[in-house]
Length: 558
Figure 1: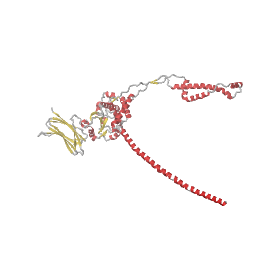
Figure 2: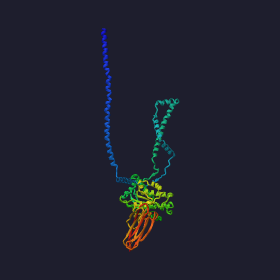
Figure 3: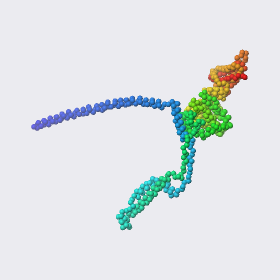
Figure 4: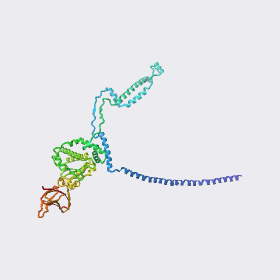
């Protein structure tokens, strides 16, 4: 039996051992097979899905943004005409609003009516000062004392009997109870007083009838403002003037409005409207030699000439008073010229060509004089904007270049700077004739503006060569001519050659040298008794070509 039992126990142990091997050994293998591929599978599935979504969204978003930007550019971009029109409408609205508010006229100082204040008793003023200085503390005291006042005034009967039975043996605490009620009643009185004081202080904050009062003006009608003799916002002329202020400030509407207000104020302070109607002084005839109006340019703009050499005249410009007289006269001339312009049409010529001659101009050592010139130029730039279509500086000496840098710094607008042209003595005539026809230029500046014919002929004289000009005369007459050689430094001569056989040639003008310092225009005439021609000879012995301008006319002899 013992053997059988031992055998059974051995079989059981072997079975258990066998089952342990079958169950426990494959378990770790299953865990590895199941868990290991799981993360790999998730990575392979998730990564490509995200990439595909990102790329698809990017591909969709790129063309949408490009289309939006293209549309935005089409909406924002405006032509210069549309930009000008839009800015003008905004400017007119601001001007209209300023006229309605009368902003072009500075407000008059307010009229203040002072009344005598009634004197208050010293105690009341002190109480008001205290309550005004510490209103918060007064409110806190009222709250604290009102809480103390909530203690009941009547005591119980038992306490009254005990107090009456032993009045002498009352404890200190009981003795203090009696004043507590008195203090409470006093607190109520103090509380009411402090509340009244606060009410008084609050009432005193409001301005009493005796305080100073300001008289408020009643609403008035919109202001009427005229500039250069043109009422603002009345007709087409006003639009042309407002456009000048817009262009001077690069179409920045608010800056243009500020400039317009300053100009109106400057005109009122200097009484420009009255200055135009006033008579010129005794110095006007001398001033007219320095600044004058003559002819038009090739586009039809009026030309204004200024000779800075006249500033050397000590009789006219010896002190500040005389300089100010000249400035007032110059403003008067400018105002008259501006009012003569046509502002009714955009095609009209509403600006000038300025020609400034610096021949014999004062040197840079005369700082006071140049400061005056700079101040005058600044006034014209600020108060007559965009009235210069071009500014020509002729006969500019070498020393003017440093001053030009300073002079140019005054002109802030790039539009105005682009209109400035400088030319030395040798190039002055060419510069003038580039913009102004010779027949419109005064003789003083090399033009042919005398009443001798209308047609001007140009000719080129080659280097180291001679050139002849023939002026025909078919009958007895007086033949007159004008001639100008740009750059000079040539020889000039003229003679009459008759067409009749046997007649002799007549020397009209002997050959002579023409230099830069000679008269820029040669004017001559000859009485012709028989048919023939005037032969003019120009001899150019320099290495540069020369341009010749000439014209002539004939008058029959009666």
